[in-house]
Image 1 (cartoon, rainbow, N blue to C red):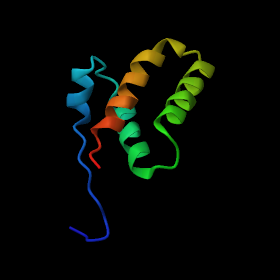
Image 2 (cartoon, one colour):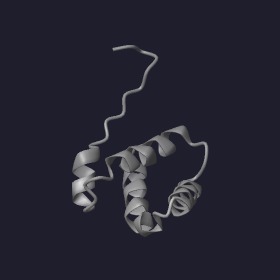
Image 3 (cartoon, rainbow, N blue to C red):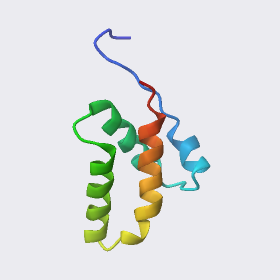
Image 4 (cartoon, rainbow, N blue to C red):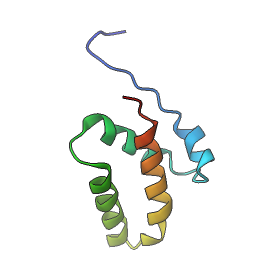
Length: 78
């Protein structure tokens, strides 16, 4: 393995099942990436994500997507 790359393993499918959102693996990984990159806060990311989905007429997913993004964010161990 390269020494200039950090590998972070996130069990996205397992977490998605645990939170009752089997299609949420991509949002879980997004939360993990946001945590690692640290360009903006978890709250800013949640707000932006929910605004984006609302503009697409998918505001009904806000609660489950928020739960998924938070789970991914919290899965990263500092």
